[in-house]
Length: 561
Image (cartoon, rainbow, N blue to C red; front, side, top):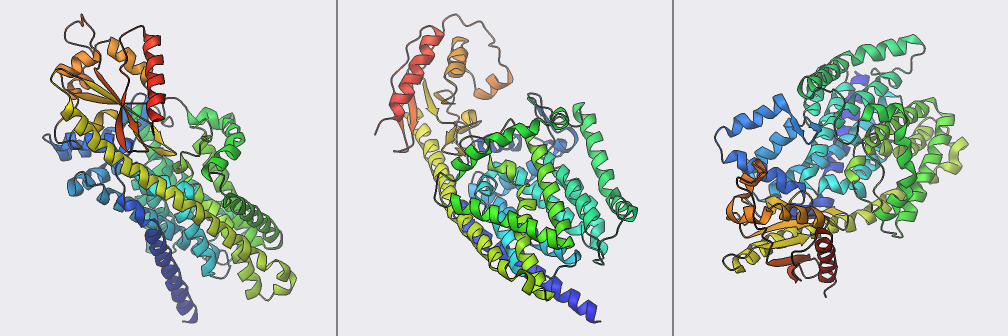
């Protein structure tokens, strides 16, 4: 009876800290709800709107579950996330608030589950339930500067939903009651959200190997491996079926991106090379802020304390080993498909799932401090008792300090995007009959994706009342050469006479182009004034000369006061 009461009390405390973490993260990041669509968001919503306006909308969404997306050599199987975006469109249309609310709720729930899982795992390892350590883990995950790309960007839904289902799988997996039977179900759904869900099996395997479900301690020898393997069987079966399904759909089980193949990169340790670019990425992420120093110092101090605690306590040693292996393998999987850290601090979503073992690792010194006090060993470690608190406070405060300007940058980019949508409409209305215009906008606004992959969707319904592509088109600041080449092939001729959708579906003109037409009006997006500024018109000439003229005109336009 006493054990049952104690278990119920511990469970109630876990639930309480999880809800507290979720509420704090949600309130802290709620300003992101006022942003607008950015970059890839336009393409997803445009495609869903096109399908919604046709017959068999539901059939088209369901078809994603059986065929995936094989575009340009990329092999994406993410039907559940796509379906969630389609549901958002049915409910919210082109109001970004609903999409962003879904993302923020998922992110807050992920932070809560990171905290709850930390408490459950440390409790099963035989350590006392220490709420501040779990709160630290959950809050660090929720307000980490690199998490803003998931929490503040509609297209971050893929990572937010996959991580949500990954964590749900682990929550069920660590339970000893009937809930554990739902773990394979949630893993199946996670694989339908994004390919990164494969990390679930890694996390679950290490938990099964190093932490006993019944909390009675650590078994030695082969019994531990046999028990871990037996518990993993349902998840391993689901994983095997997932890769067989990818093989059936795409003809390859492991390749996701056209430009890389993760398996050879993993086997040749190519994922180690990007480590050299980490310092530059970190400096850019922190914007050389004074908060970067305490964040780094606190992290190094906490890591040192983990080594000291692991030396003294076998439970901490096993927990630290679980986190470290998870972190290394997660990093290897991510950077087997990516060439390196972005030198300007972008692509924070790549680290989203890596944050789970990272924040658990940083919370371990606090748990060890509580365990020492609980077991009466405080005299041996009294000199170190203040260190975990100091390092934890330094990490949390510096992370929060860095997060709020990052969040403001995302909100500003959203407001810029909304303003550019309206400016494009106004510019199209001012063009006289027969005139055609082109606007250039940056792919990125600071570290925030802006016009990247959104060029055609920006000027089309549902974001515009009517298609604007017959009057003007939008391109990015890295497309001067490609636009020139397309214009020489008759793009402007066709845009004046055909719909953009028709050109996208049939890239070859129906009739030969005899006289190439060029835009009469050129604009650049001027971020400081949030307006379209006129660029000097580029005269038709040799390609290299034309591209150079556009680049020069772009620079002059962007430098206007």
